[in-house]
Amino acid sequence: MVAKTFGGAVHGVDARTIMVEVSVGQGTRFYMSGLPDNAVKESQHRVESALKAAGFFMPRNKTVVNLAPADLRKEGSAYDLPIALCILRASAQTVTDRLEHYIIMGELALDGRLRPIKGVLPIAIQARKEKFKGFILPSDNAREAAIVNDLDILPVSTLKEAIDFLEGKITIEPLRVDTREVFASKVNHYDTDFKDVQGQENIKRSLEIAAAGGHNVIMIGPPGAGKTMLAKRLPTILPPLTLNEALETTKIHSVAGKLGRDAALMTMRPFRSPHHTISDVALVGGGGNPQPGEISLSCNGVLFLDELPEFKRSVLEVMRQPMEERKVTISRAKLSIDYPANFMLVASMNPCPCGYFNHPEKECVCGPGVVQRYLSKISGPLLDRIDLHVEVVPVSFDEMTANRKTETSEEIRSRVVQARAIQAERFKDQANIYCNAMMPSNMVKEVCSVNDAGKALLKTAMERLGLSARAYDRILKVSRTVADLASSPEIKVEHLAEAIQYRSLDRDGWAG
Image 1: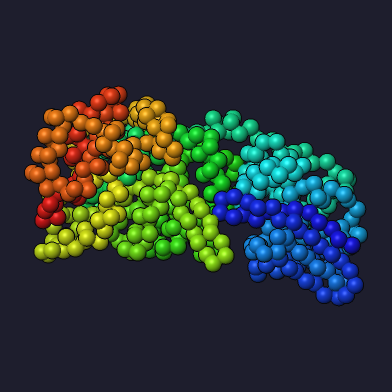
Image 2: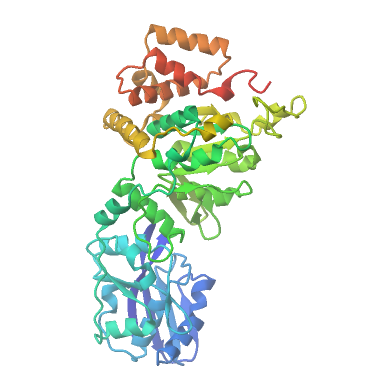
């Protein structure tokens, strides 16, 4: 007898439906086909133990399990539950005609309980698209899947509970989650706030500009100046996630298994801060079983690279293409996977190995040429993709102990949202351009036109400060954002002047 049901396989951040077929007939061996990996093959032992715990038995006849399409590799332990249910049906231990109406996924423990799995959200989206009646899955994953409307999410805790439901012995109420209510209730609930930062008003201003225009930023300063503290607060002033951005972000974290138990929709922008020992694959994504990397996990949020020169050069160079294309393509011999990578890069670094070059009080002990070699660890092409270079000076004792009120993240965010609204109107007819940082060079000349006084200032800056040619477009983009924050339709001289000061690393002789 043959029994079949359906599961799902995650491909990138999307899912494909998998048919699980089981045949029990004459013979004595157990076979599994359909390109299963080791975790899927080992399901035989988990299923056998779970069936025994639920009061059933593993057939001693010839049992063939097929996962179709057979030419697509199947990975992970999530096929345990559909395989177990199909074995019971094919061996006539259960009687049900409901298996084919549902997507069924779950990992079985040896005692028959169900453990959570990865990639539930994209599978649920695909199940709704293909008009399945519902999705039977572990209880710990139910809230995550319930984000998807118009699909019955049926949480089960044990194999026996799933069997009883399919045989009609019990009723399981579908879990309902009001996505918009969850989104509205938790959006912008951050544990950090810019009101906690004393002093550093010029750095706060530069991060506000970065948030308003989607610009990448690098902070250069001595140890203890507050670079990490400021970077961690950047997500709090970014515009709130839209519902589509929240779904995309949740899908990526679901695929990577980063959501945790009973998680639902992600409502806050991600902030990822990998250690400088990270590998190329861990940053960009990929591996034997392709998984999203840190730049995809920070999609719609912030990727913070602390102590930038300490990262391996090869790791930093692989970021260049994703920063331009806003996606990562993982290519293998038999498949190609795209992961979103629309992130803001925030980096920090010491100005030299000892950390005290250009320090107002402490003396740098680095030898001649050491500072320049340290800075040269960051390649020109990567630096070219960072719009704002900001020097961070340590906060004085008087500033730290001052009792004056500082702006909250909410107050700064309101100005950022207003500037982003201006940009949304500006780029409404442009596909895949949402903020000033995304403008290509040909659009910069049109959108960022300056008057004669502005051109004279730019020329003077290029000559006197020794700014490189690559700084030109960056200055115009940043000045456009400064003008948007001031609600100015034109780029004025003062906007250009502010943008010019954010190009520290482009100045000839900055490193002595």
